[in-house]
Length: 178
Picture (cartoon, rainbow, N blue to C red):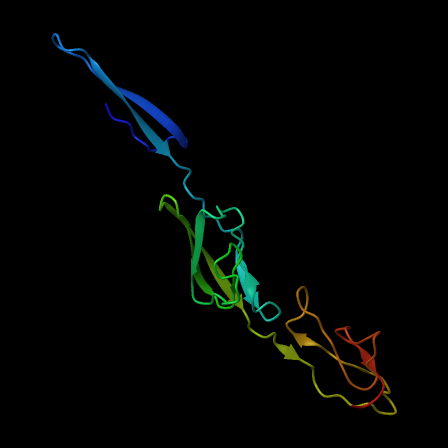
């Protein structure tokens, strides 16, 4: 008979092979053992985005096989050589596709997973509005922030009449030229 290892639970399997005698000779039997080892696991969590605040990010393969019996190998365009490159959490500094290969050093079996790292390093568009003048008739001017504003963006004005109370206001009022 045959024994397929596909989809079998890891473990030790023992089979008896019996040859029945057709005559005066005795029957003969022998045992065969088959060991199915656990296959390595390679998995990478969540997508990673590099940006102006986080130009270097760590990939997360913590759900993968690890330990003395496993080799970890990453390939990709921006793996930072900082001592973490052969761990489950390498640092990367370039967008692109990253491939993780986990190898069981005892069996030679491998598992692979990949992830795409994207990049959002476009600087925000900023407009400070039109020039305005402080006059005797208009002693206070309202500055007008424009461009990329709202969630994910922080406005910070500087100059005369700008203080901690109005420096993050999109439209602060000032009474000093500058």
